[in-house]
Length: 134
Image 1 (cartoon, one colour):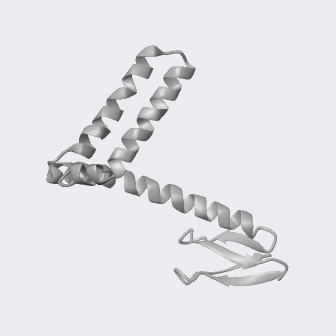
Image 2 (cartoon, one colour; image 1 turned 90 degrees about the vertical axis):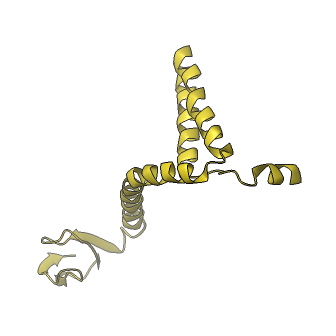
C-alpha cells in the first residue's frame, strides 16, 4: 500500500469528471455487450483510458480546470434532479398526514396538515395569501 501512496504523490487523482467518465465507459460497455455491438464495446475503453490518464497526470492545474468546466455544466443539472427527488420523497412519506399545494404567485411548494377544512394559507416565501381545502 505504501508503494501506491508514494506513486500517487504529485499526481492528480480522482475527481467528479473521472467518475463520470468511468460511469460512461461502464454504460457503453454494458450497452455494447447486451446489444452485441462490438464497436460500442470497444469505444467504451476510450473514456476509461481518459479517466486513467487524468488520474495519473502530473499537470494538476490543467486537470483542475477541466474538472471546473465539467462541474459548471454538471452541477446545475445535479442540483435540480436531487431537489426533485427530495421533494418527491417528502411528498411520498407524508402523503397521509399532509396535503401539498403550490403558491399561485411564486410556485413554492407548501405542506398543509390534512383534515383542517378550509384554511387560509400564507406563503412564507412571497407572503401571498390564498384559501385551500385540506
